[in-house]
Image (cartoon, rainbow, N blue to C red; front, side):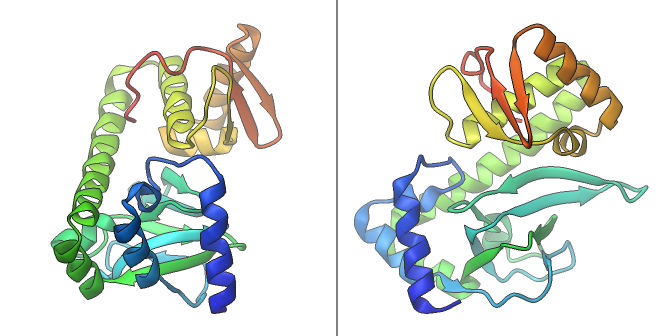
Length: 233
């Protein structure tokens, strides 16, 4: 990726709603400028970015395309935790404890990625308190999401789990207004929730029949009041 391409992608991120996972855009001007200049393009080497045996390298930011963060069940089934969109960051956990990354991460064919190396992350956190606070907050959000996901899997029925995850996706894709359109497929929902695709399809069709959602190719529009609760899945 050329420097001109990198700068062009960074500028494009200021023209959209800000996701809670895009903490760079929430920083004060000086802090934001400092960390943006520290992000360097990552050469593409296949789809896999890191796994639970990969030593900590730094914090990543998606510039284009998307990244899937997931775990593998004992049977080898992928459990999708989140799909990261342009502007969103990941890798903060390992940047704090310097241990291997706790999850698998892979990118799609359109992925363009940047990274701040581990030592530079530490220097920026010391020099700019707002960056330090943002990194710690990102780790807390990640931890709460995982704990809530585990709690939901043991307490909620399939309908409530799907509704809660759709609401969480709407919140974290920075959707605005009563009708939130989110980029997600039934396959994604099945992978996220550990449910069969048949079960997810039945729930989705039921929600459509009740007028709570509308579905188009690769997207779901929420018509229920997804902003009513605190969805931290």
